[in-house]
Image 1 (cartoon, rainbow, N blue to C red):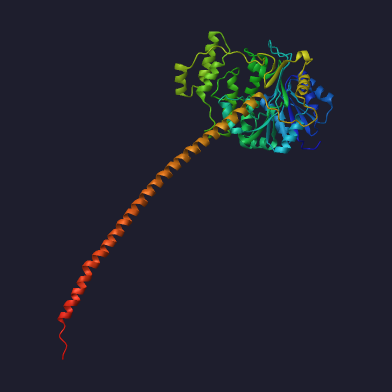
Image 2: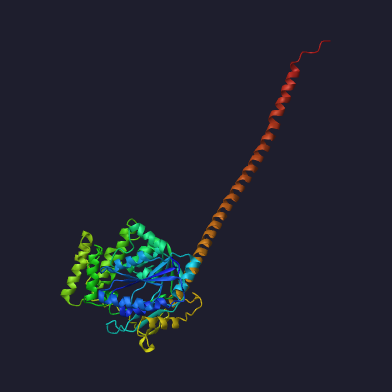
Length: 491
């Protein structure tokens, strides 16, 4: 393997050797050779010993084991991984996630043909049997379409902040391959890559703003796993603060990763993740870009709608936390005290679909009957369902949403063409009417000129006639008089 591999897979881990071994197995099971795997171990001593054993057991020259000298905040551990990565393109994979066997081969092909600096994909979802939330275990959700589109980053940021699309539509390094030049560009602008406690979401905003255009691939290149020890599960799906969530918060505080002052100090509120990441990106990268702003009143209403607590006293406590996030603005504070809505309790986030099966976009199923017990099995089943073998994937299978979008685009194009034709016809009729009016004016003027010419001809003839009657006789008379005045001839 050359010193600068095509891809670097950064695999941060903290106290989850039981899931890491399966994630690492999917990384090693690639039909592509030019890559490295960085195990950024952030575990406590007992778990770190198990991680070291796992790395030793695979005995692969591709794997680089990077133990931490002390416990790191998640963003700091990710930062460490990116600083150590040597690859031309870098992606981050969670230690309970899985990489699809065709991922690096297809990403290499797309990078070679397009030169894209960022390639984002629609990740699959797998909930481990150990997730510990009733009704959420053994779910597998994958997109079956195969399409590629080019997206303009700043426009997509605006769309996300209008909540018309999710943050996973941005080029988050957690479900994207990011070129090292783009990573360096971010470091040059801010000094580092991850600026807040949500490194995955933040990276989506940061890279989307810097990259210009990026590729969006509907085919999953990885399966995002959710297990009992996932930070996402602890901070989004569980109402009460867990030991994992407490550890997450404490390490962030130690390393200076703090919430933005314009967002509530309440991590469980899902909109906080979006707003906090956007505001950190805006402050660092585009503070004067007035086209990308946060509607603080609208996002505050979203916070209020995301309160999970049902006890009135607890709900009021959360409202006060939300109120504190707008205390800097007298106008917003007055609105909050007078008009902010009291909404019913929200439901905790769930991945469980209303019904299993294919909905025209994604396939949702219970993976347990297929013998799936871990993310490695989920990857194998998903690859089989997608029919992605050793051949290049033809990205020509749109989803129902894609087809609807194409139909709508064609309808809008047809309507636009109809409107343009109607406008052209209107202008043509107007021009013809104006031309007809001008022609009538010209004919009228020509008739007037003809009449004037006739009058002039008549006047000229009359003048000539009068001249012959009045002036010629006078000349003859003067001649006659002059003859009379002449002296008689001398005899």
